[in-house]
Image (cartoon, rainbow, N blue to C red; front, side, top):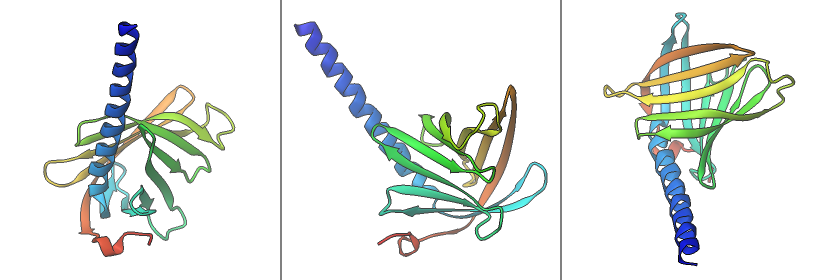
Length: 170
């Protein structure tokens, strides 16, 4: 009986720890709120905006705001998990779960996707945010298409920091 109680208490402690780690990682990740610019490895200039919405319960990433190729990713807590849903220009919506974070590197791994007709079709499979000591942000994404993977990196520099008055929602 005591062994069962110990197992239950350890399970509850792990669940509380996971909740705490995800919540802490989410708060740390929200520090990137603002406008960022960068140049891809292929030389393409881009702008990415990060803003919170829904009373701070989501972090919204918008690529090339206002452009026809705009894409959005939304990061939010889901119980003990930190999730990211990527609304891709390809028309699919991969969902990723944070697998690890050390407060500087946030790694999201593929869970599933909606509107992905074929599991071998191209889709975002891994997403990383790495805060650099110089204040820049490295964004790394891995797309999977069948057995082929393609990794792209972009180093972003902050254009401006958005104050609380610019956060979306009431």
